Amino acid sequence: MKMILAPSMLSADFKELGKEIQTIEENGAEYLHFDVMDGIFVPSISFGMPVLESIRPATKLVCDAHLMITEPIRYIEAFAKAGADLITIHLEACEDVEATIAKIRACGCRVGISICPETPVASLENLLEQVDMILIMSVHPGFGGQKFIPESLDKIRELKAMLEKKGLDTDIQVDGGIYPHNVEEVILAGANIIVAGSAVFKGDTAQNTRTMMEILKKYE
Image (cartoon, rainbow, N blue to C red; front, side, top):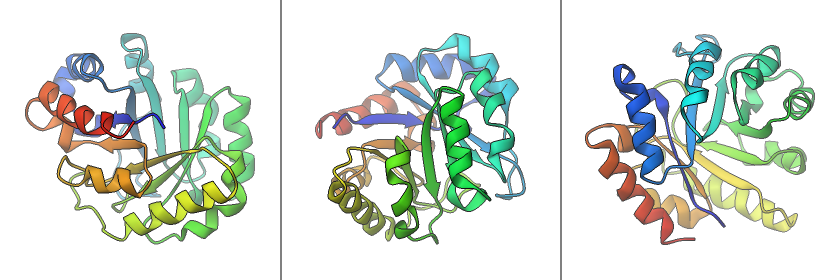
């Protein structure tokens, strides 16, 4: 399965945002993880459609919009128009998750669904055939810089087994506390899309991206 690095824009240097995006693209990243927070579903507030719309013409990276917002169905069309290629919603944030998935499809975007650390993997079982990607949060959503929750590895393994049982080759994305020292155990558990914020953007962005990509490529 293709291994993909998805640097989290939340950790980028915003005064140098165009340069940061160019750097990760030139050094092998394929996704740009775009964390959207509403101050309701999670405590923090980040950014929304205007920021995505402004950067869309500047990059060929897959714009991976992670909507950590209550009732995201309200904004699906707007994020699609702003340039999202992949829209990920939280199971816990949707009153009607299947209608929200259908809305993303109708807008021409790929569908991701995410669960928080407290939510069991089994809660996704009836939705697996409807999505392109599942995001396992390995920290509590809403803040950067948290430590990886070790129990997340068991959730990744459980999800991988569920997908294999159904004959599905769905992408598994993991987000939170991932660095070069622990990314391999996340990959070995079954993940193939790695979200990394501080590990990429803190320090030498180009070298950090190359370091992560060298590890990921070993498992393709």
